[in-house]
Every structure is written in C-alpha cells, then in structure tokens.
Image 1 (tube, one colour):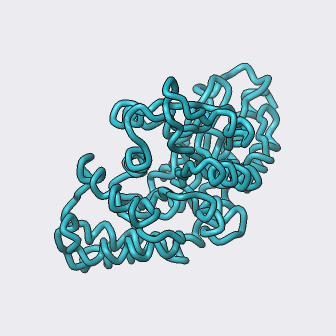
Image 2: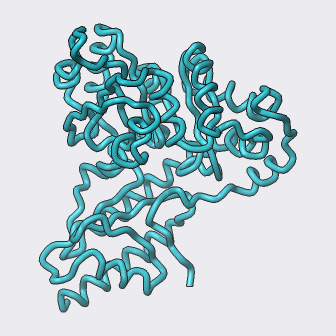
Length: 349
C-alpha cells in the first residue's frame, strides 16, 4: 500500500536533478567564503528576493533567531502577532538566546492590526524596554497557511519607517504567498527589511533556508550564524540543491500543490459531517472540522491510517492536511474517496 503523507510539507525529497547536481558540486570551506556553490546560492537568493546580500543557514528557526539577534540587544522588545511561529514554535529562542521581550498582538488574519502595532511601540523612557523590531509572517503557519492582507503590511511598513524600527519577515513559505497572490516575490519582500525563506518544504530542497537583508545586517548575521553552530564548512552539495529549489521549475510546482489542495478542500467540504472554511484555503493547508458525527479527529486519523493516509489531528474535532510535491493528484482523489467512505459509514448513509 502506498503511504500518502498529508501531515506536513517538510517531507519533500530532492528531485533527480538535485541529486545529480549535488554530488557533482565543487566543495570548499564555506566559513572562509570558499565554497563556490554557497557563494552562488547566496548571491542568487539575494537578487531573487530583492535584497543586498544573503546567507545560507541550516534551518528557518536558526534564520529567524539570527535575525532577532542581529536586530536587537538584550533587554529590547520585539512586536509580533500572538501566534507567530517565532513565538509559538521556536523553543523560546528569542528570549533564551536573545534575551528579548515579546510584545504580542492578536491578529486572526495572520497580521497584527497596524494601529495596535503603533500603540505597542514603547515611548523613549528609561523605565521601558526599547522597541527594536517588528516581526511578520507570510504565509501564516498557525492560521492554516493563509496569506495575510497586504494592505496591513503596507500600513505596518509606513509605521516602521515613521518610528525607525525595522521589520523582519518569517517567510518560510513566502513563495506559496507569491504564487497565491500572483505577484513577484519581491513585491512582498520590499515591505520588510530582512526576510527568511525556507528552501525545503514546498521548494523541495532537503535542507536549508536563506536569510536576506542589507549588507551591514548580513555581516552581523554571519557572526551569529557561527555562534549558533551554522558554519557548516563544505556546504556545496546542499547549496546545489538550494539553487534548484529557487528555480522557476520549483516555484511553478507550488501552483500544482495549490491546485491539489483546492481539489481536496472543495470535495471534503461537500462531505456530510465535515466543514471546511474555503475562504481560508489560500495555499497548501486544509482544515476539516468534524460536526455532528459522534466521533472525533483522532478516530478519523486512525481510519485514514488504515488506508495508508497520514494526517494530523490539531484539535478534538479538527483534522489538518498539508499538500506537497510528494502528493500526486491521484493521491488526492483516493483520499477524498476514503474520507467519503469513513463519514458515510459513521453517519449510516
């Protein structure tokens, strides 16, 4: 039985071209700036994302932490949406390593209210921590891969300029956002000072993320990358994969992932006993809410697993599916059929 893994999009495997290019890539000591593929990847990524320079890091979590460290000093405060990945899912690194305070603002559409952001900026008073950074996220993980309203980003950008406070963007799935909005990714990165983008997940590289920003910022970021253990020496094999991950071919694959996601969402929404908020299916996440069936998400997950389908229970009555390039259209059709059978039996249809 083929396993259909819909738990996450971190399962993507390198395509044959990546494997071929990787093991033919020249190697050098990247800490000394002597790995040619890392140098090439960093230059290409900076250009593609519209920033002066970039660095390659092992993970998005490290990239975000480096950004916080480079933008702040211990005792400073950063502003971010209350369910931002930096706050909820990066093991408290900003506080533990950076020694910064987190000022959170509610934002159910993935972005904090601009007026609340401005209201959260500390006055210049010796009693208060200094507000040193605003963090945004696109797409927003905790809200199901939604793309926050761009008008909010524009307004927050104006506020950041007014107060001289930089913006860092956790853009782990930023290319999903650009595909959804049908805009060049630089339309999104021009609204922020620094940005982290994951090369794995939807783009399909096996390891790594890119952190981009101004030249002086990247100079400081390199110091923190080394401190955190991100100086990986011979990185050419990984960076060769990263270059292909940033190619138009890989970015175009995201369009297919989104189409498969929409197919799954619309068909699940039509199954009695399930609800899907189709207005919030923007990229590659689907949340199915179980209603009036007499069984919960954990029960449904077990039935799916018996048919070789892996999904995630995110609440007692909520199932999450995530689509990636490892999932074929035929897998989506099969999953829909299995879900129909599960709920028809449960409801006695």
